Image 1: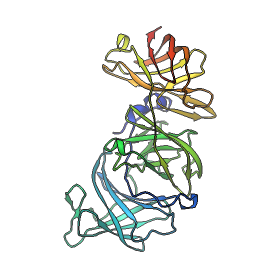
Image 2 (image 1 turned 135 degrees about the vertical axis):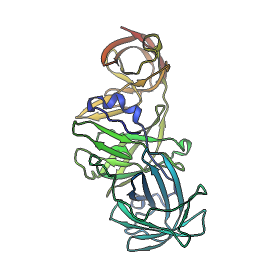
Image 3 (image 1 turned 30 degrees about the horizontal axis):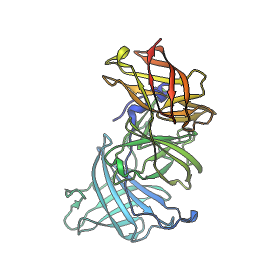
Image 4 (image 1 turned 90 degrees about the vertical axis):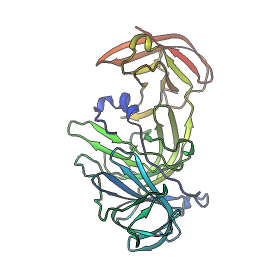
Length: 367
């Protein structure tokens, strides 16, 4: 799924572009900060597919070694997972990995280039049979050569790789996100167009984890440091990860689901079968309801979300405007709406809404 989006509509339309790809490995060793795991990712592209070799280095060693766990994922041009191979690295020699699948007897080899967290796949060589047996039981003939990046002049190079763990409840779905300070966009591929619009592409979650790329289109280089991330799985799941360290182009975090306790209703009365985007805040601006929040140019922002067709209600989270923390308090509030529909701006309201521990129903009334 690729959608070209105008920059000014980034907040309101992003919900339609949510996506990512993932993998899972054994738990990392130790709790020492110096032993935090890092992820090495090597990608190669054919005309229609991406082949991605992911290896978790549990001890952040200088070099990968036999015994490390791997997963090879194959993703089609639409961002859908079409095959996986999981197993163990049996040999490493000058950038070539010999891989032993868990569900097949015959090994195969992948030749790579590049240092650090991200590299390229040059070639994939099958064993004597000429085939690779995937976890799904399907045999494939691997492409002999691959290109190092997406063959698209608008595609940006990734700055870093983020491993997101704790996604076992969401296998088969897709994930995307942003760092709260707007340094990084979290997705599979990122394309920037001459008219200053962009699109992102989806990646599926596999075996309870995800390895999206991090894109910094402002500087196009790794920004080391500690970040907070918001993540989205479809239009109904929001997660957060705080204090995530990005070092040398790699980071690892745990997905923490944020319950969506706010239900906005009443749209069908006015906008049945129309796609709308909206912003909803308390009358005094102290709180806003959104699936997500971010900081841009030293100001905090959030967007309501979109709804379309016969969908009458939208699930959101109540945030504090002062720091974008989740609001868990109680009280009675008046809410105001700004709605975008058919290129026009309209307003709405909901008065006397009772909020209990951050949960409420906000009935939209136009005008």
